[in-house]
Amino acid sequence: MGLPLIGRVWGKTIIYLLMAFISTGGAIDSAWGWPQPDGLELSKKAGSQTNPVLAANTTGTWLAAWLDDSLGSAQVMVQNLNDNGTPLWDSNGVQAGFSQSSQADPIICGDGNGGAYLAWTDYRLGAAASLIYAQHLNSEGSTLWTPEGIPVCTGGYNQSGPGMIPDGKGGILLAWVDQRNINNDIYAQRLNSEGTTLWNKAGIPIIKYSGSQTELKMAPGSEGSAYVVWSDTRSGNKDIYLQKISRDGTLFYSSSGYSICVQPLIQQNPRIISDREGGVFLAWEDGRKGFYDIYTQKIGPSGTASWTPHGLAICTAANQQYSPVMALCSSSTLVMAWTDRRSGNYQVYMQFLDMAGTILWENNGRVLSQLTTSQQMPRVAEDGGGGFYLAWLDSRSINLDLYAQHYSAAGEPNWQIDGIPIAARSGEVGTPCLLSDSGTGLLLAWEDNRNLTAPDIYIQKVPLSGRLESGIPPELFEQFGK
Image 1 (cartoon, helix red, strand yellow):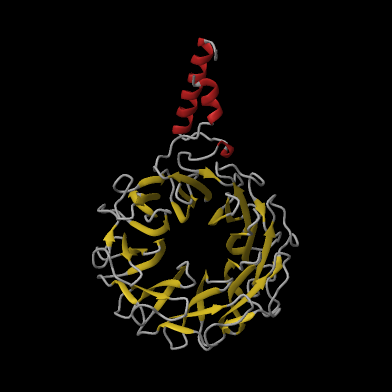
Image 2 (cartoon, one colour):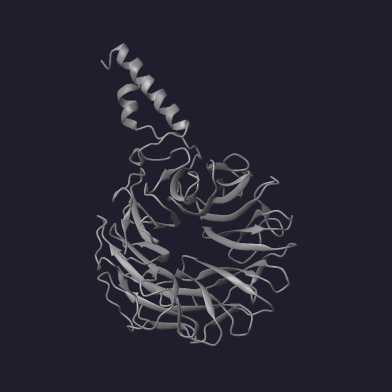
């Protein structure tokens, strides 16, 4: 029979009050799920929460890590959320490595069993003696290694900027910048699920050479191998080099690395993603013409460059272009995006390429928006159907806010023309990251200063429709909405 009339009236009144409460920015328990207006707060702790990173888990859950200074120094925290946005571990996250000293550069990946691997730069031995530490958590959020984490290698100090990928056997491959030889070199290590180092205890040199090797990024190859790209000053200015290392620690190229781009002036800020066939795509900022432009390269599974030697020019427009990002939308299409100053303002531009390196859109890229305000720091992810998602920081309301857009495989925007607001409140946002949700939407995390005291970390899942509706619990609709 359902509820009597008075029950139905009061039930609907409760629904309307709840909707009004949410729409006016009222607090809501994150266990009610997403999407929520302006996102879910990952931690209610005091102090600053910064540097969010995301990873998908094989169990259909989402991993997030960040830095939290509520204990007096920045510590790596981690959370596991189900597909409804409900935290599965401690409500404010789990501490990855107990330490009284600061930690930095958090990275995360799933362990294949519902748990997580984390790594970070750790200063427990002092500012001039940083080490790379790692931790493994199970699906319940319990630490499997020592509570303070384990050092990744025993060789030297001043290690920083780690990268990490799964090794395909339940463990992880890590790389980092290392100053044991005075100059910055890059070393790597493999750990199994128990935390045992499987290579030389001091790590294996990815590149040990004159000059400085920094800005490393990693991507998976085939059969548990890893690609490592970096900027390299052996010739005086920065150039782009690459190395591939197998799961057993064998280097694919010579010990001096493979020169991806050695051109006049500066090449820097490299990016790398897998081509899903054992090769990789690379992108970087390139100053060979006096301003920074955007260049790219494809390295096939055989290890050789497929496109123009020293890189294919994606954008050589006037003024500066910065911070390229990439996503493989399908087996035949690569999308790239970057921050662009050709008009004097910060704008986001995009480009489509096929696997032959043919540029498919307008020369020098297609602009995201005709707005005269600033758009910058793009992030991109494929949508599982040949299109892609784009998120960026946007100043159309004076403060920097977070906006997003969904594009079809033809490059047409599917949401409102200049994007939808993900976080547009008082205070600025920063450091966004995003992941695709296997064809049903995207996940975003960001730093958010809406409380105007210290930044917090917020997270949001955006459905394919782009509609960010209030997260009223379904059981309330079932009970009162009849």
